[in-house]
Length: 423
Image (cartoon, rainbow, N blue to C red; front, side):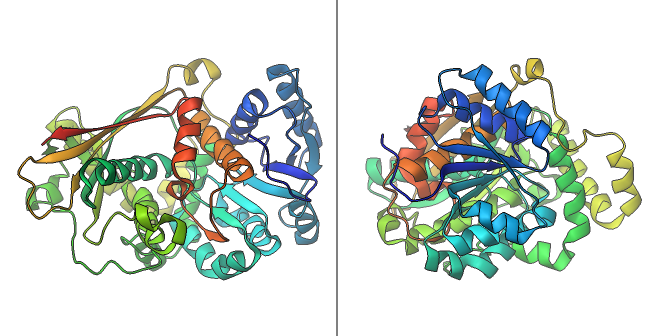
């Protein structure tokens, strides 16, 4: 498919290309993207960027290597000049609460389309509040949280909702996503972000930003909420039809922010209104438990770990001594052994559902979660470059890119399969 015409020097710039996730993103671009792509890698170290370019040439000798652009996020004049050269910018430079705002701000101001892979919900809420109006004026499509946090559950939910609409002609009432299988270790960048997160944001702001529908452009007024028993609230474990035994998900509040924003955006975007989930929509995310003891242990480990990270600064210092450092992660040999699988169910919003039909979804990827993040970012950028998305400027979610994006990800290895079942 032809790239959209524009007057920028580059189709795409990858900021942070020398980092762990940045390298995986550039690798996917070098191997899979059109050979006439005009692109650049950007960072502070020219020698490290040269090494990235050399790797790109090894991955695909038939294409032109990316240009090198030196950039310091603390120099706004220099950064603005660089951002204006790109039609689309991908940034993997985190923690975003420390380094992300200049690029986000300048992309919104210059009309440069933007993608990142943050999981910092309070930071994203800040950026939407500060720059949504600017992006709408310039036409910049802003796509934060477009990596494994939180594209998979967002796209799984969207796929189930569209399936119910087509198969049963119904809105979606209750959607549940479960991380069914995960064999992946966090990179140094992810761990650094988690530790910095609790030092940077006031607890009140975190609580407010992570409430359901906190960043939705419309309020959720039906009062519908996922039902949880008292025992589940205490122990974290429950058994769900077609999903099995599940417990608290470490990514639940992070992913919830994106999915519930999608709900509101689909109601408001003119080209997406026929994809709206429905007024009674509820959503929850869980993690697959091996057994009751494992599920309870996960639930309390998350609760206690969160408490110590928030309220005990020496604990954060201790954790830093035993984790990967920023830019580090598992080896390529270990990455090849990793995989992730999501499962989900969605019930139709039908007053009388005598057949008890549901949508059942399975989504999976064989390989590193960080390689998958690179795929989400790169393929999202290519969708903006090539597809008629019918989106104006503003801050969006991965599901807003629609079926063409899902199809691109399928071809790249992230598979989503949805079918109708009897509950």
